[in-house]
Length: 250
Image (cartoon, rainbow, N blue to C red; front, side, top):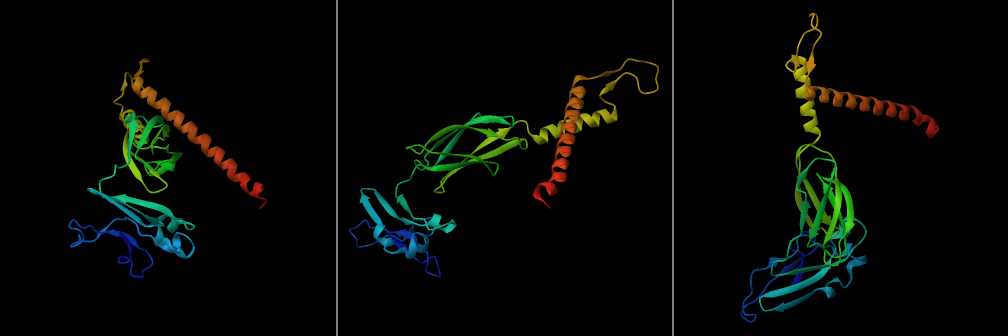
């Protein structure tokens, strides 16, 4: 195994390559790239001196283990050097388990994680938005609950990724979301407008009895509450905006 610049025309960043022989070194397999991200020695530590001294390989029957100095995290901030590791046999991939797998938005779900880097910070995102973070245990596992914000009805991706780049994704099906409420309100209001949900007299008749089904009544109550909340929010925002110049001294 060795660091090779063949993938970088500027010859600043290397990938780890590997080859093996099954006949005592008479013939060798085609070079195989091991790393999925190149390392620039200058992003590992100042000037990248002696970085190759920390490459190593160990072979046993049917397998080989490799370690190297990996600087990928240094590409996104200050110089950062970690130990990269690979082996020929397949490594267990990261996975997460979500329970329950479905429910209403705005509820708590339990997430269990397996196969992540041990004792390392991880982050949890729901539909692309990071909602919380934590730290794995010595076995690279974690078990905790998160709050799933209300979004649109349907499958929502929950992704966990640790600081070294390992990631796993599972799905939470949101039974009730914003679009569910909107659709039901729209249908109910449309029914009211067309008169299909009303029974009894129309305006101008002599009868005094009229009925409105419970579903429509509940919808109107919900709609009224929503409008009231919106009015309050707009009023509060207007008050804040009016006070901003005074608070900033402008």
